Length: 219
Image (cartoon, rainbow, N blue to C red; front, side, top):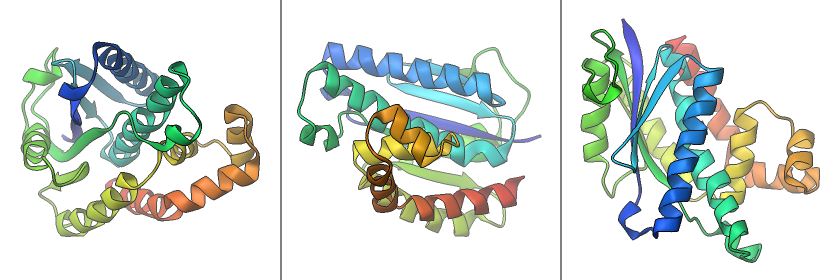
């Protein structure tokens, strides 16, 4: 059966303090728990700074990866800075980021632990993550006719996300969850026009177009 696998590792995790590492691990646990409750996925954290997710519906793979990335780079990073009473300006400086590789292909049954499971999707995802060091922070590997298209699209997506601030990632995260700008403004505590500005400057329109294209292909 064709499924999707996301393999990820925290960028520059060895430079984190013990306190930062604890915040990050809790953040990873929180987003995996949330995704498991809302979507048809299984998630697992291993080695303290890595994760793997098995997604039964390949069409959900891109949105899942984006939720993970923007949660870590946005929500977790902002909460960490707020706990240190940093200034608003410093909140745009990323604290955490994560590298994610999506693989789409056959999965040979399911093991109790994802880290020892096998199949084409696992191999494609795992090999891709190894190749991403110092190149991209989000990418995809498939063996289908859309491979070249999405490899190019994900390079552009990576450029957008790499330049997104924590505040922008926070807005993207809530938009991925389906919240309106008014609902986001109430949740964050700033006016709707500021949410709209962060959304537009983050490249949300382009991100949404890619999500729609991706879901139409793998639905």
